[in-house]
Every structure is written in C-alpha cells, then in structure tokens.
Length: 139
Image (tube, rainbow, N blue to C red; front, side, top):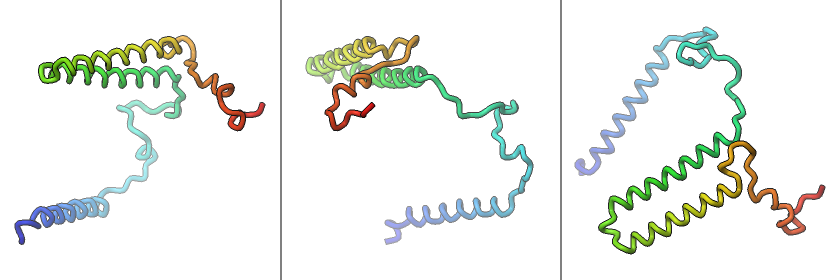
C-alpha cells in the first residue's frame, strides 16, 4: 500500500518545505522603506513618464499577422516533414490550405490591413446599414 502513495507523501513534504522556506524568508528578511524600493528597475536608468502609452493599431496588426503567418509556416514545415506518409491526399490538403491562406492574404490586402499609411477599415463601417432596424443606432 505504501508503494502507491509515496509520490503523494513526497509531494506533501516538498510543499511543506517550500511553504516553510517562504514563511522564514518573510519573517527573517530585511525591511526596506526607501522610496526607490517601490519603483521599477530599468537597467539602472531612472524611469521617465508613464508606462501607459497608446500605441498605433498597426503595431498590434503586424504582431497578429506575424503570429498567424508564423503558425501557418509551422504547419507547412510539419507537413513537409511528413510528406511521404501524407501521400497525395496530404498534398491536396496542403494545396487547399495554402490556397485559403492566399485568399485570406488577398482579402487582407484589399481591405487595407497591410497598408500601414492609413487606418484599417473593415466591414465594420457597413454594419449600420446591414444590421436589422432593431439593432441600428439612432443618430
């Protein structure tokens, strides 16, 4: 019976040890009341201004596009590694996948998502006229 529960007993004693160490550190540790203690450390450079800056939406769009296309490249790489096992069925599936990616890229280009000189406009501009009368906002 002890052979079954020894991982739980070991885990219990490890948890008690960690909690005990954290308690001892809290009780025996130094207390600092300086003003600089509460400020973030930025590699020795004193902080200036607020950390709450408003970034342009294009920064976030580029990040999202990068993540999306990076994951898609990962899928294509994984497919290339298993190409022999996938056969012609896998080839057709990857062709459809890359075709859909290409259609999405063209759509993104046409909507203006890749144009970094002007704000991105999507179909949200036309939602007011496409929504039913009960959902339209009154002016």
